[in-house]
Length: 169
Ligand SMILES: Cc1cc2nc3c(=O)[nH]c(=O)nc-3n(C[C@H](O)[C@H](O)[C@H](O)COP(=O)(O)O)c2cc1C
Image 1 (cartoon, helix red, strand yellow):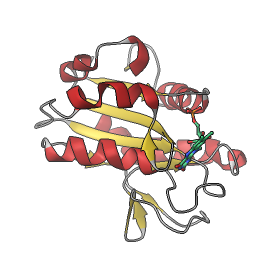
Image 2: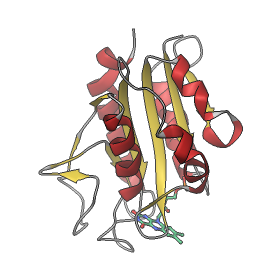
Image 3: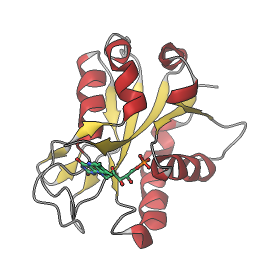
């Protein structure tokens, strides 16, 4: 298998999104899926194509399980790897730090040579600012189960179609 999803989730929202993305892209036999809390972070090195998901905690910070392995994550060689990122956040409670966690993973993977795909338009969100925003786009798919759960299915479907040809072999 060349593609895997790695996610970190504290209350289950990122986990649900990860499982939805997994199913949408073909599920068992097509790609693998791992909770970063239950696998060695070095496992990432075994895949050429990666989908990485995190929620945001604290004030724009990485989800705890990702945070615990972040020093090792930063040392992974991402050259020749294609990475798509998704992030869960709450744009109403944290309008200045919306989905900041995904930026932390993005920066680290990019610094180690990753080809990042899957940017997502900021249209339809009410946040004020986000580290994960680059101009009119987020650097990955932004999901908000706290305020816009009714939009999650459609966002995931659209994003999966957008990345499908590049993230699957
Ligand atoms: C204490 C706390 C801090 C949070 N901080 C942020 C934040 O800085 N930015 C953001 O976008 N969301 C923030 N959130 C919202 C979570 O990221 C959001 O609820 C997410 O869906 C949780 O996903 P998970 O269950 O996969 O961990 C915070 C939530 C809590 C309870």
